[in-house]
Image (cartoon, rainbow, N blue to C red):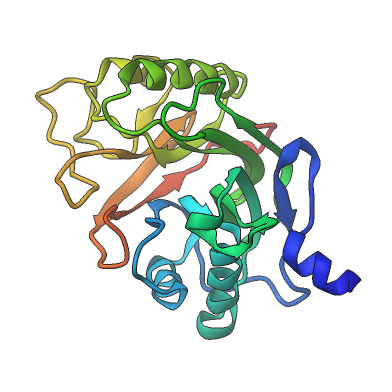
Length: 272
């Protein structure tokens, strides 16, 4: 019975999130060092976790932040990445609600829903927080320290309020940027549900730069769209770090495209 309860509930961690370490096997050898990816995996959607895992494996990021992530889905994705693709990831969760409708599970133990971060390196100093005003659905951010390239970096992952909630998103950006500003070096992944020139993103642009070199907060920019409806909503923001490459790949597995970047990390290695 205790084993069944552990499988249903999952391991806990300080800050209200869940965190797990990968199986005791050799570290992944085929991830691309310095590659980070953000992906709203779309939930609920009629797509299997086998396909989601294959999408991630196609780009083999060292770190991937997922939004609209059910804990059960992420666990399956992680298993498929290891056993089908030979990619071993550690995982941390930033669930913001318990959703039986989205994530299944027993009515008294619905699945956690929100953000998740996979990393080929161990994760530490997990922080999860819900925004004071989530808008029409609970929203939040999570942050971990992990290795990108061979440097320790603070990595954030967030999902802002849905469209047509500009004032709510502005408040959420204020909460997020207050945390990001504490770090000289940080990566902010997420679905911001706002185009680059949206006023609510002003605070984010003041701290960081998107990895798309053509994408800036002016409406004259030529940002690559990251959604099926041809809007730029998904970002890899960098603070104190530069990018060598930026890629956007549409996928039938989600209405959001897979977005990744290859990064240059500064020398020497000091605290993030």
